[in-house]
Length: 561
Image (cartoon, rainbow, N blue to C red; front, side, top):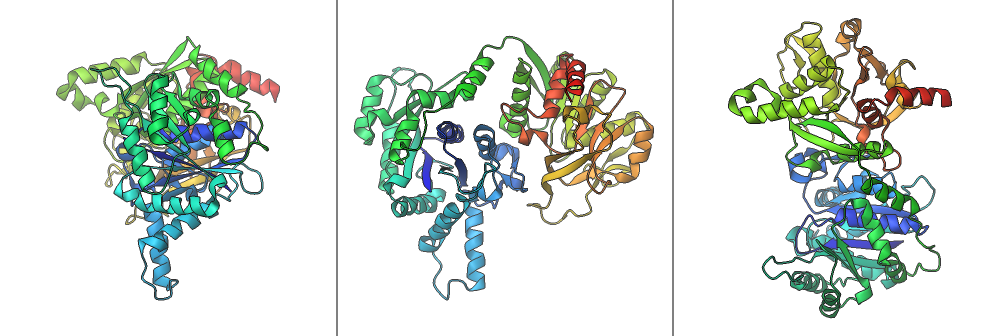
């Protein structure tokens, strides 16, 4: 196995994930098979119990793994299907070592960070890198490893040491280290400063790792004298100093790497030049340029709880982007804090309340994404009510589906106190309930997670047609609460149809309002499987409905099938 390690220096949030993903894209374009591993040095076992404000969204994999959002970048960019083990955390490593210690696997030895923790890290990397993730048999050619955090952090030290040992044991021609660093420009002087990168590389070399390539983040392209300075003081060939400057959209990053012959430097280091082909990025180039040249746009109202940090809904944003590009449109996402729509907001913050409602009314469609807790729920209910009553295309995902059920029960059935037991445990009309198999004492990995099958109940519904008249669909889930099966009868009598159910027939997965042009709620998260050239069917449907193209698209699909 060949390894490409991506580390970061100077500051966090430089775009190591996008850089690692882009390296994967370029290597794949050279005809190589690629797998990816993300190392997160935090003590959490996984990302499942962290607030989106901490690390952005929690990405869910087919096997139910709740992982860092960078694995979503890998899946979208490199077009692979990863496993929970492709995300290594300090918590997972220590847990596995302590489990072994309790079993007596260490035969009375003193268990230490070196060698026991570092050995566990190496073994994990070596075993996971062999798991095929591209649908083919046998291991990949190259494993791209991203080390989270910044070089020099105390929490990442065991990983740095394990990776140093790994680089030594696999040999020079099987290991390539790319260090991502920042080249700031001070406003007063206007000069590109290399000193932070010099210090970062010095720190890395002091820990026993020498970078083969430098990926320098900057606002503007690097000047030639800056490159020469970096080469001289960081002990990296000038040809191996890559500049990843700001670009119109992140799809340009693989093209930037290709244009600077990054693939050639990596392949040379890994002794793969003889089996690799010249990178074929024609589709990728077309996609990046198409997006740059789009002029028409569509306004999408995103009504959520975590709108202060857009990374909280990263996969939703990407899925909207994929769908819009398929329709030759640019997405204009209007972020609306759900609490700003509520009646209380009209008294406390009247300006924010008025602005939120004006934004909602100006949108071509409404999307209510997933979330947990009762903050902002009343605002989401008002958004769903507005979309339903005004024939505005609506897509509710997970919590967004439950919101549409609560709103319908209150407004149409007249059940004024209809609610979810998540928000009101004493509600006399629980239309959304806690799932029987859920745990009330443990939060981590106790939800209904991962890829599950949804069976369509009728082919005569928008969702089935969007999924090309398939009898079923496999999508990823992440929820603790579900629509109460005891109220399905009265909801359907009133006009709300549950057109998708799980294989037991008691768990509701998809709802539609046939009297509405596009009013759909889904219990699963379709955004997690959306890809740049294969947009999610439901997001595509939402954008088509928002631009008046849905009927023509569906009738075209029917005639084709």
